[in-house]
Image 1 (spheres, rainbow over the protein chains, first blue to last red):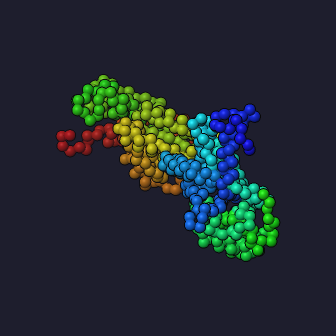
Image 2 (cartoon, each protein chain N blue to C red):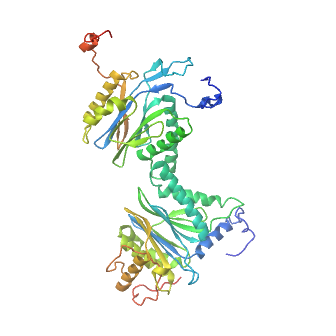
Image 3 (tube, rainbow over the protein chains, first blue to last red):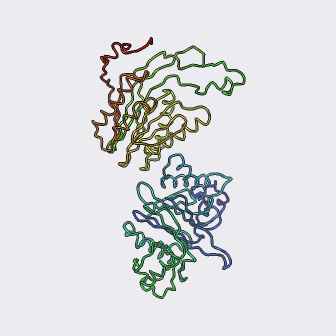
Length: 273
Length: 254
């Protein structure tokens, strides 16, 4: 995308009918580190790559619990993501207070999308520079949505956003038809594999990724590092091709930390971007 | 209506005469119970209106008119039924709120719908918030419904007290009907038994509650929906010998 005379503010259309500022905001999402999500009929798993700037610092929080039944993973401007998470938490809490019932994910996602749209139609605002993968449960089952800065939202069986997400997407595209009936642990394993794809050459370690799960009977929670590491070790020993590890841990971490360097990785060919 | 209050009254200036100070057209008890996987509710069709005019602060002293076709139970959305006692105009206001609530819920058009639990809690919030502003909706509400096979029965008072139970009643129903229900209600009532039990309660209320009217409606809520039956009257018996000469056994001068 090159600079042009129609891209200065969000309220200017280009002659081709594009809003460049919105498209630039979506670019910001592509620059952020990867986040992936996938769902079965009863569970949704979110995972992201969490790289710290230096060894001295801690890494950025990219997965947020919004309510017991909803969580979100972000990619892009994490500050914008934090603000939107706070909005989502507020909406959930208010709904729960009035109706003693969890806010249906589908409705939260629409409210979020409408909020993002406002920023695409005000000259004094800018679009949010963050993409959100919203994972949630409601009466009709498990859902995964992607909210983008343009104010659009889509429902997915599995999706990946952020840098090098294409690698993860290709992996997911091959396998997504089986996800609906996957067990919770298999789902997590697939998530870990997908994350690994985006790491391209780096070792998959629980210290550089975060995994979270929500499911029927299981409130949204982020898996702790240990459990995630055990999961990684388990499936690496068996080989990354087949999902089921010998001892699947409950922590099914979705470590997408693509450990390409894994010497036991024989089945999966290195992905080209 | 303008009330002449002393200047330092805690009730505020006369411009506050918009607040509800006491109910004006009221309905009496509502009784409801769970049976099998459904709900039954009963209420009579009476409304009584206070006398107009006198300005003494004893508004409950006498009745001016009786209305005999007031529908005090209304379906809400697909899953619930609301019964109310107390001020009828406030009940109508509540129905307006709920209508709007259900409308917006339907407008989402997304397969989710507000069930009886959500409506009950919404009503609790409304009633409690009005009470906090010293402008209550002068009603005792009974909210029953069935959603996804789960039956729900709850009540909210005009000050926002709410709870759920297997059988509930408002007003006089709490004193006259609940004791009967506590004795005779059980988990596996059939429809006929449920109706008989409700009729027993309504008959006692008819005999003992002076604001009751002998024209009642029974409503049934199942997973399929709400049915409010046509009004009918109960048989009463007034030939008890004690009624014929009440003073017969009395000792003393009165």
